[in-house]
Length: 103
View 1 (cartoon, rainbow, N blue to C red):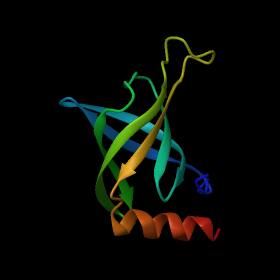
View 2: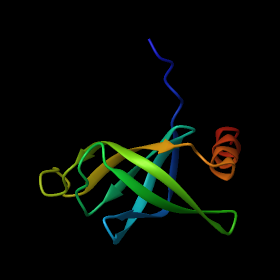
View 3: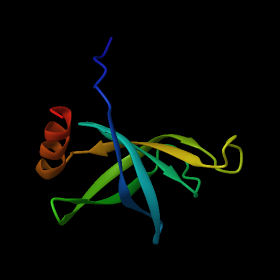
View 4: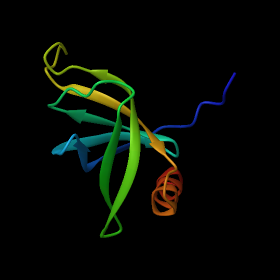
């Protein structure tokens, strides 16, 4: 069985780009391997997307793959949710996660 990474609660804006469109989303959690966000848009699972997140005043671009998605149209609170696996996380993201784990 694979080891489950600890998830860190976090709240900040991230931008997800999919098929030429940009969507502002709210980061709700993260680990060294992925993020979860709240969104008003539905994203199909297992689709490669671009993520832009501000870390230390710099915009950090990442590639991700959607792993699970809750359609905002069917969610009880009408807020969609999305789980994203980060493909080859950049060092700035990994360092950010490490510093948040210590808090």
